[in-house]
Image (cartoon, rainbow, N blue to C red; front, side, top):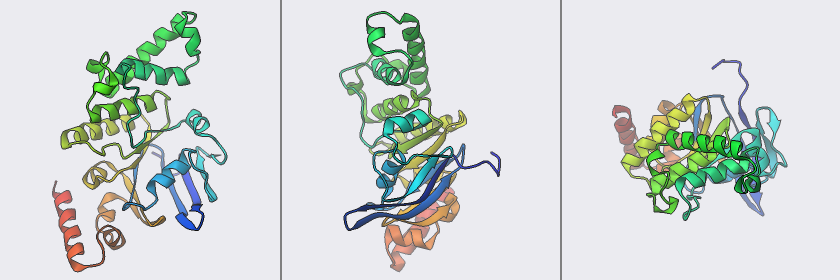
Length: 272
């Protein structure tokens, strides 16, 4: 990764207001090509609001987001996806009564060159074959090949989240935004997902992660951006963030007991 390579995503002094409420105030940071950057903060810090601005689901009151040098101002979510910026959502978004394979095929049809109607009536069998091969490849990538013929709604929660990732990857993004991907997962499922994130990055896809699981964030991130009350309070590598006084105060308060707890948690994470 070249030191002079421009950022793939720039959040440029973005602000969001809902009436008199300031949800985000003057937020600015860059995401470098090929890195895993995490956006963290206490509940209500503005993380999801920032995510929604970046992906076109919410328009900023001020500032702008640029992806690969192109302003995203005024673009709809599907237009942003076409530029190469895709996301997952906090809640699973599978079609529960369709098979896992068909879920991914639906995602591919949304972004593929052929029309779904043409495929259904048999006018584009060659394209259907290519999409089927791509669907199988994506399921293998996220570790669900063995579950391809099962109904998506029958899968465990963590596996449904993996289907959501496959759907996002079906758009062939240059950058993937993951919104609390391990929320509700057990330790084993989280470990599997961490390995998947690393595999995605290894294929050249940049990742921006919003997550509450701090051990997971510290393990997988190259850099971390911390929000509190809609404002950026810290930015840097995990080693610096876990001991940053402003971050400790935001999460655990000002008392000495809270600081001691934070230091103990930091030591445990470092030793792990």
